[in-house]
Length: 226
Image (cartoon, rainbow, N blue to C red):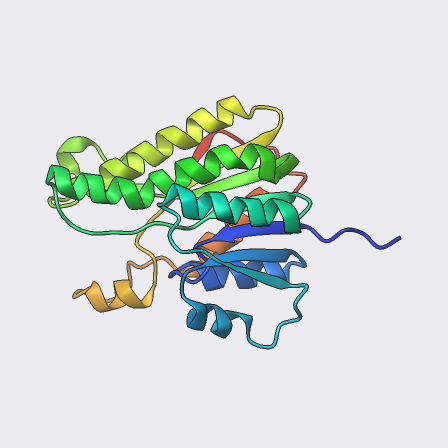
């Protein structure tokens, strides 16, 4: 009897980190179910891959409850249960105003909250849920860069969500957040004026995500700096 292929749901698969995470899991023998907003970018990721390796689901906006409810109903019908969810939906902007914080919470916290609570029905017993946060959340308030309060506070909210879900799902789903540095994406390369030496390779983030998601993993309730 053929062994069932491990399956991971990757949200935000066409973002900066998405293609590398998708490729890392497929190379390791996982089936990837990916949500995306940009059909052209997803087509580039899919290329000539066999359909059983990478399955795509278009979604309008994960920040809108109606769009996500429609997506989760499709996932529940088409897939019998995920071994892991890797939530990559998020964004970045500078600004310290209340409006900036609201915008960052809408992008970095609200979608994570929606999919986090849906994980109880989407993820198999013993599976994993991974969020991507920021290493900036570990900095003391007095040393935080100016102009990033909205972004950092939205990621702090995400950290708190991850810890709460780990407690809520204890013994059922392993929940962790990766505290990443500035990633080596096209957008971040263009924004840096002092060279790219301090950028974190996408592979250095994707590899520990894969390791944590392994069905035999035990780690949960951690904010993991890499």
